Amino acid sequence: MEDTEADVVVTSVGERRIEVVRALTRLTALSLWRSGRVLAHVPMTVFRHQLEPARRAADRLREAGAAVELWCVECDRRGPERGESLDPGPCALNPCLTCPASRG
Image 1 (cartoon, rainbow, N blue to C red):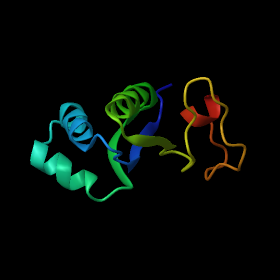
Image 2: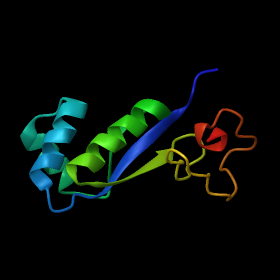
Image 3: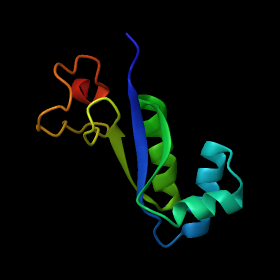
């Protein structure tokens, strides 16, 4: 069974804006100018992919200095980080059998 997708949402660029812009450029292949424009409108979904690539993208953006959250596309909840439990609230879909957030 294929994992559903997760959104990588940048909630804050932080003090190292140029490094975050460069990290986003490497992840998305956007130009530096376009990446800067995208990050001018945070919170913003900057990447959507399967859960593991989304986690890796979030890690790279965090290393550059951004504040980042993962959101499960399937159930519209904040997805779990590594070693973290899922938010216990109800899933938007019933049943949410394929949700990667539900599987942790």
